[in-house]
Length: 214
Length: 84
Image 1 (tube, rainbow over the protein chains, first blue to last red):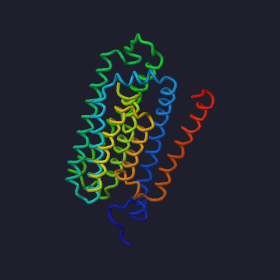
Image 2 (cartoon, rainbow over the protein chains, first blue to last red):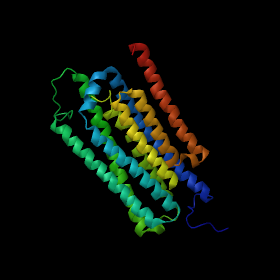
Image 3 (cartoon, chains in turn yellow, blue):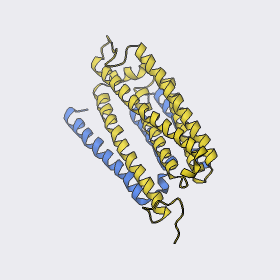
Image 4 (spheres, helix red, strand yellow):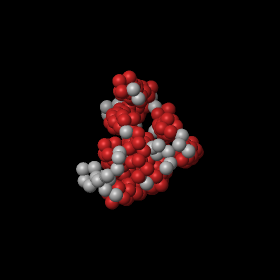
């Protein structure tokens, strides 16, 4: 019995190979979700104990740029989803362009985020660096900005890795398509990018939309 | 492609909705409900969890279970001891 060239020798058939790839990816996604869930739990307790401070901190953020960044990330998730389905149809050229587009959107996200961090630095809101505040919500506001910088920085690291992975597979799909006769690696990098989007879906309202518009 | 486009449109709509909800002071639970809906759309349609093997779905379900333990037990403690 001859096996297809894209079948790894450790698998008995393509179906098993496909399921094993995706199961591994989801175990990783699960561990990432638990990592961010711990941070979200800390946020929830902080917000319950310091409601006014968290509202004040949230109002200091740039809601417009936060919403724009959410739209960018949701759109990049759409483009990577289409890229994955193109790769599964062996249309590697189209997939390559879409992966490149996704990476560009990721870079735009990071640029806007960096500008926001600069804004907060200018207003002396970076804990451990230049945090100064004379108002009445001191412990809570400091906590809010610790959470803001920890969560957005951890998320930005994930975005950076995702951008690099997308660029890598854009190159592979364009010039080395024979490396991925089974498109599963592209599918898995897509799952990772969706995870990055998933985290931001929660971070956006948690950070920017606390306590209603002022 | 068509499904993906529809999901993307719904996600953008929900993003608009969450901002409007914030402007009308609809509160944390509303924002959370919208975020959960968006996450469910991404997981089901973009990450294709619907089409995965039962074992993969089980792993995803296990996350939900662990989240319940993490949030449920911690919040039960805070609500009962500190009277939130």
